[in-house]
Amino acid sequence: MNYSELYEQIKAKKSFLCVGLDSDPKLLPDCVKEKEFPIFEFNKAIVDTTAKYAVAYKPNLAFYEAEGVLGWQQLEMTVKYIKEKYPEIFIIADAKRGDIGNTANLYARAFFERISFDAVTLAPYMGSDSVKPFMEYQGKWSIILALTSNKSANDFEQLKLDSGEPLYEKVIKESMTWGSKENTMYVLGATRPEKLKVIREYCPDHFFLVPGVGAQGGTVEDVAKNGMNSHCGLLVNSSRGIIFADKTENFAVVAGEKARELADEMAKFL
Image (cartoon, rainbow, N blue to C red):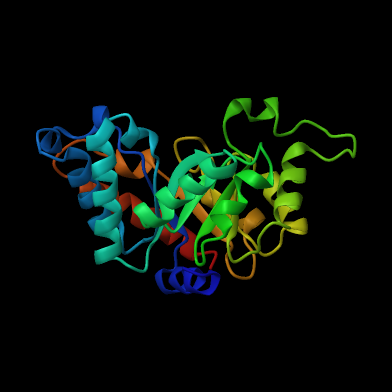
C-alpha cells in the first residue's frame, strides 16, 4: 500500500483510526475462550464490527508469540482474514524488531513474505543496518520508534546530544535520509502532543503512528491539532479502549461503538 492509497482510505472513511489487536488470552470474553482458535475468533469478531471505521489494524506480536505455535498460527489467520475480506485496510506488525545483517533480512522476510503485513515497527538503536533491509520491499513500510508514550522513554529518547538536539530528533532526521514518506513512518506518543507540533516542522510529510490515546491519557484533539498535515499524516491507535470495552457476548458490538465514537471525533479534523 502506498502513501496515496492510505490517504484515500482515510478520506473515504473520514477516519485515521488504527485498532490495536492486543488480544491477551487472559482478557478474552468467556464466550470465545473455549473455541479451538480463541484469539482468532475474538479478532475476527472485532474486525467485522470495526472495519468500517478503522484504516489500520496493529496486532502486538507479544500476545501471539507468548502462545507458541498456536499463537503464531492465529496471527497468520488474522492477517489472512483481514487481507481477504478487507483488502483496503493497512496491517501493522507491532514487533519492535531491531537487529542487523542477515537477521534483519530474515525478520523482513518473516513479516513481508511469510505473513503479508504492510508494515512493521522497528527499533533503530543499531542504526541503518537494522532498518534498511525492510525498506527493500516495495510497497512495505518501516515504522521507526522515535518518541514513545511510556514513562521510561526519557531514559534515552530525550537525552541531549552535543549538538543540543534530543536523541529522538536525531533518530528522525537521520532515518529520513534512509527512506522516504512512501515507506517510513514514526512512532510518536499521544501523551506528548506538544512535541508533535515541533516534529512536524522538520518532518512535514511523513505519517506518524500515534499510540497512547484512551487508556494512556492521550486525546484525538491534541494529536490532530499538533500532528496533522495536509494529507492527514496520522494513524492514531487505540487498543484496550476498543477491544476490551466489554467482556460479555456483546463485546464485538461494543467495540464497534467505541471505534465509531473515535472515528466521529476524527472526522471533525479531516
